Length: 144
Image (cartoon, rainbow, N blue to C red; front, side):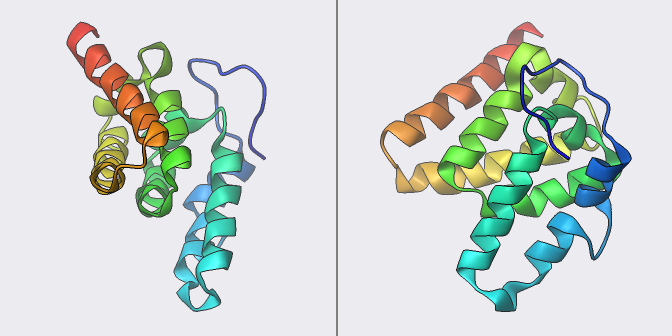
């Protein structure tokens, strides 16, 4: 479903990938809704979702249906997953695109809320990577 290989500035979402993120009772939304399965199952579901999103972070963030699945996903993300997502969305001026989108802007807000929670705990080098990615977002906002 997801992609690997070089990131393109904008990639079209396949119906399969859109369904995985957007449809109720399927994929990400279903996995995050099953709280009773325990922490390990949720962590695996979150890791799988970020794997599927790889290379499609910006179009997923700006998609009407997919953005709503990304918001709770970002809240569940590990520091490393969040840093990778923020870095990917911000690449090639993507932050300006996301922030200017009614759906992408909500995902940016969710990422900033998740970043605040992680940075408050200060995880050393991983926090620095997230800080660098957020700094790139700010730079992109000023120059974009």
